[in-house]
Every structure is written in C-alpha cells, then in structure tokens.
Length: 77
View: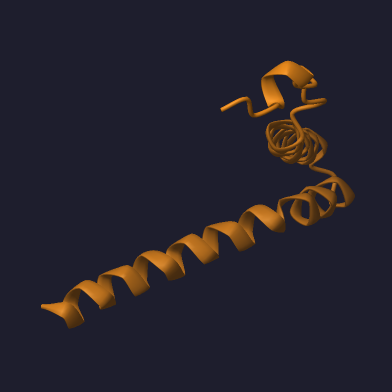
C-alpha cells in the first residue's frame, strides 16, 4: 500500500515539475514563434507569460506594510 501511494506521489511530482518547466520556457517558445512569422501566437504567449510574472510578483510583493502604533506594540501585561 505504501509503495503504491509513494509511486502515485512520484508521478504527480514528475507531472508538476514538467508543467513548471514548460511554463518557464514559454517566453522562449514565444520568441521562436515570432521569429518564424507566427506573430499573433508569439505575442499572445509573451503576454500570457508577462501577466503570470506580474501576478506572481504582485502577490509576493504586497507593498508597504502599515506601521503598527507604538501603543499596540508595547506589552503592558
């Protein structure tokens, strides 16, 4: 039973790594398509990868954290 579960998890991990690798290479494929004359497909792929990068960056860099008032940070207990 444990071997079956671990094999299933390994297959899922390989599929996830494969999809991550494909996503990382998307801009390379887009530039290749543009050079081959498939402009619309290349530009759509570039814009999708740009939107993905922007979404990841904006979710990890949420901006300035508001300052905590001094009275709230002082332990009075």
